[in-house]
Image (tube, rainbow, N blue to C red; front, top):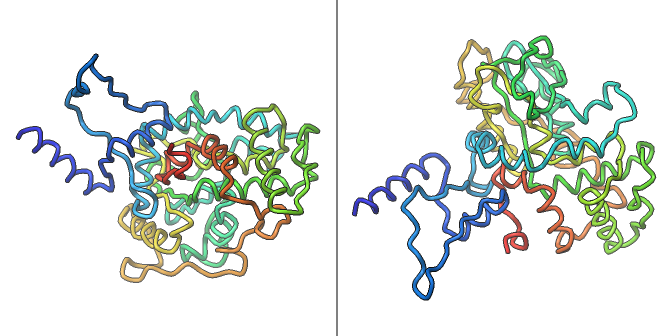
Length: 358
């Protein structure tokens, strides 16, 4: 009876904090992605052994039910931190091979962030996830003026194993009491858009081993085979892809800029592109609750709608590219993407495709 009561309390606590207790199969599928699947051994010639009583594994719901604050908490959690380490930022950076250390070329190791000192808000860019819109219209979004009015673009270094906290305050406006957010997308969709972006920039190739570029794009079968070859090479070869290859980094690496002294976690909120309008309303309400003398030009009772522009959302830069119509049901392609971008599934609460759950 005591055991049942304890389990009931855990369930109530989980539901109250955007967590759910998964069944064994669901928990195993998620934990398998970070190499921690629970295994129960059967007793010799008898029934299955009863595992020692312990706190059940908790996993997040898929993104449709997970809210921006909960997703930010998930990103800060131990499972995500382990998945980011496994993704190995330096491996992706080595494939970028920028030709020189100029502003744009150094995006392979630093991310664009947009900061407003007056309202203490920072948006961490996530390329290929409506980031042109979210960056170029960030002032209009937060009602500080037109376009980017009031926001300054700075470059923040990615977090690495030897530099987890900002020490050089001259490099940034942001500090511990700022409100920091980003927007993410289904890992498969973001990865394919990034592939097309890198692929179409022929003048940026820095290595002749990019065989996929010589492959045709006339039919969907050819376009899919070309994408498969790209991701196979990303996974297995030492090819270089030019300095725009940072678009293809897992989102969990792209937004994982160094944190700041005194912050409990990097992000206050993380929204999704799929639920952009609703999530941004929640992001703005969360920002209003932070206090700190911020003077927003809106209230919780009158959250502004996102401004509409001609290019985003939902139209992007790559959807009309000749190589963009890819068979997203290709088993070979989906399995590759689940492997390469597993950190994004773990860190942002997206449900793995059924093919990858087997």
